[in-house]
Length: 394
Image 1 (cartoon, rainbow, N blue to C red):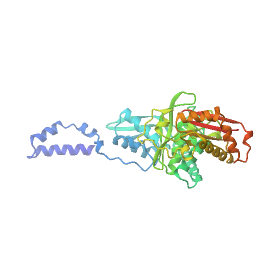
Image 2 (cartoon, helix red, strand yellow):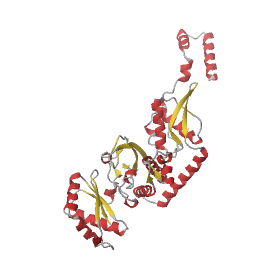
Image 3 (cartoon, rainbow, N blue to C red):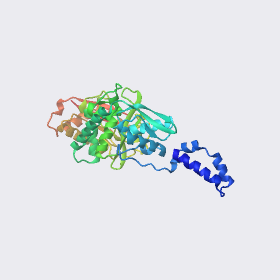
Image 4 (cartoon, helix red, strand yellow):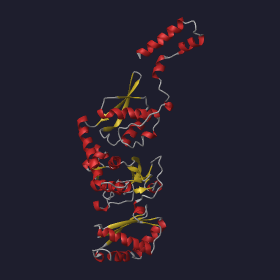
């Protein structure tokens, strides 16, 4: 700053003694405000701010920011790991600060050493970001390394798989190894809680999925909104959007966990929310926004596994019987299948249970299994929102 002031004074003196100085230049100098000049922000519309290589390889929320906010995001991300008292950033108002902070936390699930609040302070003409840290640097180093090693081992254990196969394994791993807990503990909202402590709330489920997808090289980002839980209550919620074979889908691990829904055991994980569209998930989820529209159905669980039916007839029953027999032979005890509309679903439900055609299906499946299905009881679970029937033999 001293150098700038010195240069300014030198310029004034030169003009004062120069015969070529005119009245317009002198007038501009008289009206010049040095404080305003020094405090002036660059024209952020003309500033290019590139994504940093550090942090998550998929930074969806970074790309939704303006250039000034992107610069603040980068300034924080590049220095926050050392837990400094403050980090110099461009001047932000409270709304801009909140947007940047949420983008950092959503994009980078390794920042679990940060609390939920942050502030900006001014020192002279400069602005500084101040974070709340909920653990020491030594504690964070140990936890981060353990999380990275665990995530790497999980993905390596899957072997070489397609994107869809990897997604299926990530979905099943998290649901089978994490219990839903929402008691307000810090770790419950983190990937560390889900993958190491093996207990987490929806935010932990979704951030754990992002960590694993990052390791697998699959584009994924968390998304927040509202959802209707199994008790019919609307609550804040977080889930994922994944890009599989070039197309975007919603993936909600929390609501596919049968224990979360208080409707089953660990062996009964569901696929209701495995790669669904914006339209479908809007039946139970609201208040979310993504620039990437989710309209594809090619990677939906039921479509991929030939459990999606546009009609209910003899061919449908034959397919259900074959799928049930395959599930029994693989050690399972159920299958779930989906219909294309409420009308087809209603017709199927009437045929299966009112007309008791489900027993015809059991008889056909029984011919292809080593178990005697005729001695087992049959039950079902309805999901009218998604036109799904879950058939269970016990």
